[in-house]
Length: 236
Image (cartoon, rainbow, N blue to C red):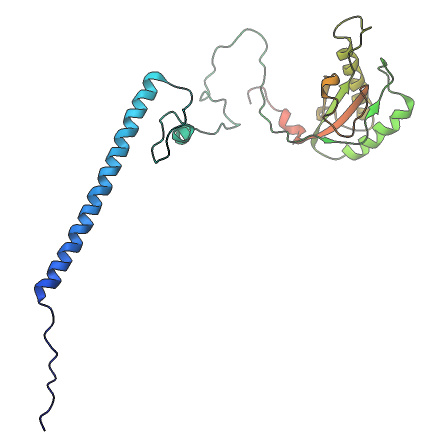
């Protein structure tokens, strides 16, 4: 009996394998060319838009069609050039610039968050600036809550404008006097003066604090800012 032949049947010629490798390389090469052409077109488009932007300087962009192209004056295009302002610099690289005559005014940038009402409103009689005797206990309770905390405190005095006021600003002066008297009472209870900020308001902001229901009142609110944020050297 004859033994079976161990040789395998002949396969594809060797040149077929070489041809397949060459086609794969050509396909990769053409894909790379297409990609580079798209990148070049995108850069050219952006260069044109940037030139128009510098020439005309539109402050904002109009809505454009969907796609990967963004106008040069759009917010997304300007994101890489936008920076953050640091608190330890004045934005002028330390160089003073001439300003208007007068006192050197410091401008602070703060994020005070949502005001939190502390205690009950201090209610005043109509047209009166003095703290009623029955409202002093309310102020003392507010002082106990504020004691030992670093938050900035805003004292908002309210007084509605009335027809019998001698001056158009009488109600604002009354509101300020009420808030100042409440602040003085808080200082007597140990609250530091640099934590307090007095604001004079009218009936336009009556409903801002939910706990307040009277027009003749003083609200004490705690801000999401530390009192030390408002203290520092003049060149800071």
